[in-house]
Image 1: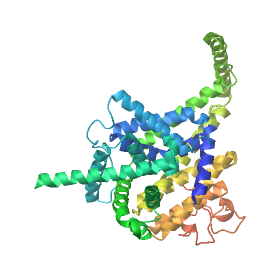
Image 2 (image 1 turned 90 degrees about the horizontal axis):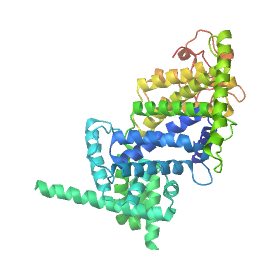
Image 3 (image 1 turned 180 degrees about the vertical axis):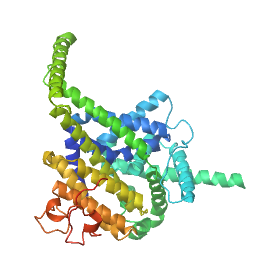
Image 4 (image 1 turned 90 degrees about the vertical axis):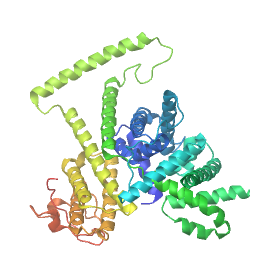
Length: 193
Length: 284
């Protein structure tokens, strides 16, 4: 199916959900829950927070969907703005910035083998640790683009920024992420020696 | 200016990687003059994306929250139906005092409850299965749940196929069961156009996926069963089957023998077989 027909299908689902169609709501949930969950999990590193916040996000979507306007933003951008606001409000409640403890052990990763699982887990630890050092806008771009799978245009609308600006932030974030991961790996090597 | 151009190229390569259109190597070969600068960033982006995309959503969690959301949606719909047309509920005017709005509304809601109670009692006395409106709501909710299940199973398989993971017999069985339930519980003649469109889209995607899997999976029997179930459900909803002649929507009565199993009447590959026939729906 082409991106255009996907977009048309999504539009008809969103419109039906706005009109109170529960099958459409369920389908929207199927389409977006994994992306919202991944986005929140990548920001918090905690499966319990991810579950609670993902549920909160979809409850807010349910409350607000009849006020959603296509001309203001694509549905995905609107949805991830809600997710971002939920994260901010959670952070305020917790009184901490970002992840408060180590990566939750309950995080499940898609892996082909136990070796893959270990490798993925280590990589996830490294990336989440490195992401802690990024400014908030950079973390948001990285998680929206790579965990939630939003396009640059959708990311820009979700963050209320221009596309050019998002590309600049994305470049800086990747460069900093890479640098942090490398310097931590180097430090570990030196410790071993 | 040059920096801006580099960011455009980096993003173009990242987007191509994320959508599966190009590998890192392919992108680097397209921009040899900046490949040295591009490579470390592109590899870091690809590693980050691969790792974050591997974060798994627990199906039980997803399902539990779905049920809560749908329950909340049901409650909202019921509350809205009760308060529809009552002044002060849909659009509370800011200038009125609370009680001026609330008192008539409370009276109206109470009256609505009494009325519904009376209607319910009347329905119960004549028909033990509940009033027609109640039945319609139950059927609608069941259809939503069945369609959601079928869609979910399809998404699981599509996701696995896209990731190059093995599609197991259990996966195919789950798809088969969800598809059959959708066909058995539905009343297509009462289906709104939006739902019909969603079912059609799902069936179409299911045929495409099964066709793709038939060349990749060893469980030919499982694929055959799933194809047969899809053909049957296509017939129930009046959806044309790929490969059948235009305008001839399969119907169970016209194309299948009573008591035949889907496996006996369906070909393995939907797109390649012009003679797909619908079978009666067995119990999932």
